[in-house]
Amino acid sequence: MMIDVYDPWLRPDRYCPTQTEINRLNEKIDSWEFNVFELDELSSGRPLSLAFCAIMRKNDLYSVLNLNEIDVVRFIVNVENGYHTQNPYHNRIHAADVVQTVHHFFTHNYLRDLVTTMDVLCAYVSAAVHDYQ
Image (cartoon, rainbow, N blue to C red; front, side, top):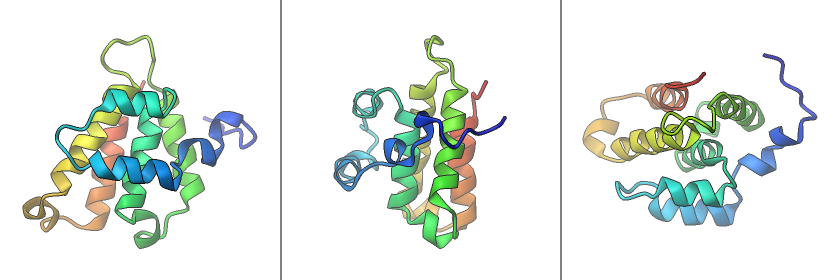
């Protein structure tokens, strides 16, 4: 799939959360009670992109793994575009929920201490793409 870098849907500022949004998300994103439907509203229908970028930033994965944030944003936006909004369950809201759930499990030291940083990234990517169309 070709990525049109001039496509307004791929603007990184649209999908990477602002510091205010990150602060709001960080208060809740580790919790089992996280409300993915509120995230969908906050993100204007782009919950996977917002959750994924916020979790990447919260875990400092861009710098630790030396990842280009713009490239990651383009990747996750393309993944999110592959989820059909008309599917009542396997859609981008569900994908965001799975990414957040995986993140929740990694907040527990008994699991986090058993894996590498690359394992964590792979788990997040796997969660994001698991129902990709």
